[in-house]
Image 1 (spheres, one colour):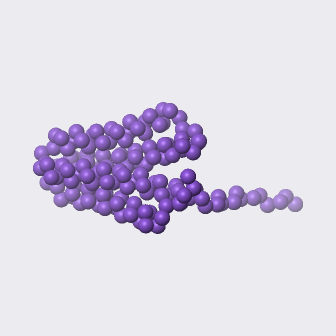
Image 2: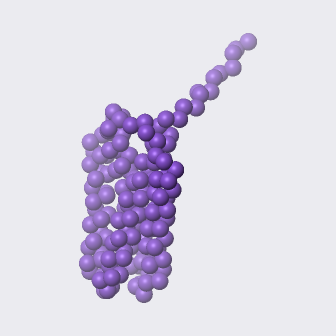
Image 3: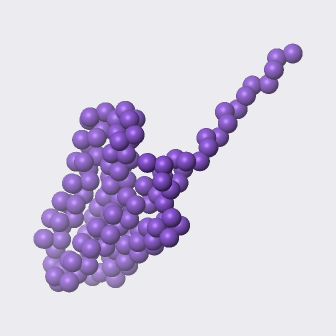
Length: 141
């Protein structure tokens, strides 16, 4: 698990994350829905991104033998799935065209996937680098 990601994959992951988030938010900005509905979809994006990154971290921690409590692991899965479910329910009940619904769903899923890839790349890039030396105390005279 010490393989570092290529610069191309790191760049592609960041581009995908930014493209998904920007597209989703530009769509919200230009939408004719009420402000409270825009706020709902924006909050779901933030919640989903945080949940997906947290889930990726806990899965990776478990694979590397770092202790993760079952309750936190379960909460990460619950949060990630509930973000997707909340977006799905919101879009199902929205008075948007099918193409708009598909646009929001795809931009949301692209953002979640890219956030996981960025988190993985960040962790992989740092896993092989030497740990910073712990500060030493000056000798007592």
